[in-house]
Amino acid sequence: MVLGTSSGAGKSLMTAALCRVLRRRGETPLPFKGQNMSNNAWVDQAGGEMAYSQALQAWAAGLAPQCAMNPVLLKPQGDSTSEVIHLGRSVGSARAEHYYRDWFRPGWAAIRAGLSTLQAAYPGGRLVLEGAGSPVEVNLQPRDLTNLRLAQYLRARCILVADIERGGVFAQLVGTLALLRPVERPLIRGLLINRFRGRRELFDEGRRWLEANTGIPVLGVMPWLDELFPPEDSLDLLERRGRKQGAELEIAVLKLPSLSNFSDLDPLEAEPSVQLRWVAPGEELGNPDAVVVPGSKQTLLDLQALRQSAALCSDLQRFAAGGGHVFGICGGMQLLGRELHDPQGLEGGNGPSSSAAGLDLLPLRTVFGGSKALRQRSSQALWPGEPLPIEGFELHRGGSTTLEACQPLCSESELGWVNGTVAGTYLHGAFESGPWRRRWLNQLRQRKGLPPLSEQQPHHSRQREALLDRLADAFEQHVNLEPLLNER
Image 1 (cartoon, rainbow, N blue to C red):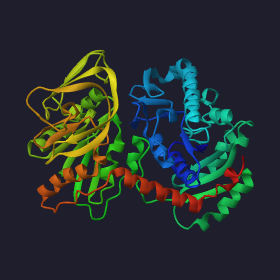
Image 2: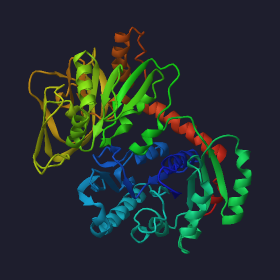
Image 3: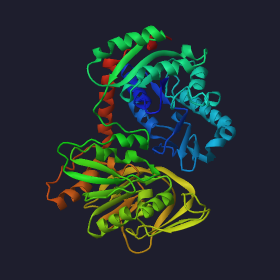
Image 4: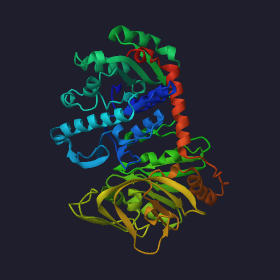
């Protein structure tokens, strides 16, 4: 099990690295996070909803993602409330102060069911568990669902990860160990220092001090990696501030308060010629080459935030009126529509039944309600240019219809629409389709007088595989797992 001294210590990527390393050694690693809180979701082949980070770990393990790997997913929706997903299906919503009272027993049952499903499907596999946040939140320890309760239940050997980039790494580790109960302390078999800059030998004295004062071996010191890996939550987006050398296009991405499925932007982030610039309500849109409006967990709530930021809202409408390219994904597409109706109060509007005028950049009417659309989809993109294969997944409530004639984006017309230079789709992951992504970018390049990029581009999953291999290479070079793996 990979535990961390805090949120953002690097547990998700260290777990992914461990999965890839074990796969290289001929094992079948089974990634598992009992409970995750994230709006960055994935839909498995069976139509189950799970956290994207566990999907990434599944790919690292060479397995198809399945919701049993993340049996409890909490999706924050504002006002201290989260949607509760058990084994891929929405089962209700919970307020923070009542969560453990109402959902502890069902959550533990879902976790055990997920474990049983995985172990039955892969009887020779080795579970690789990821913790959540810190394992020593003393006010929550008696009701812990996914850290040390799970480690004790499975008698897991635990690695404790600390992020040295944040500072205070000795206090992080020693303080965490000090707050463990006596029965929990023996579970920690190794320490791992993450995101170290500079020569590793500069930390040799610190390593010796930690081992002498904790009695636990430091298994390794992972370097700061220059790669841009998928962030676990929207807070990590704040760290994406670097400017690319040689970037020719700037794409503004609206950083909505209820931003979801921001991994949709990873393929654009990976394009050497593209610079993403995240723009929050209250900030200036500027003069980008295109604007992307990503997914939203609370579409009406985010629409209100845009309306309250009148300058950004009017800037976006002026940008589109001037022929600027705007692309909306799922909730982002709904925001670009003309009418939004929420009779059951699902999307953060005012009261149990809300309606609102959208930005009127696409002639769409969206009605929220009913069960979620949760499925993998493959289609033909009819825009821009000649048809091209495109694929992704749907993850939304309700649906949209056109109020006037509008060009369909895909051969399945319910998946997206185009109105001049404004387009949108319900397909999460659309930018992963390499040829279609390049064709969309080439529109922007042509307008700017830049030569076109080759459309002979593989699916983004190939780049993701290469990234995972580089992560595993660094892990194997800098971390000694033998003390853990040799102990059966």
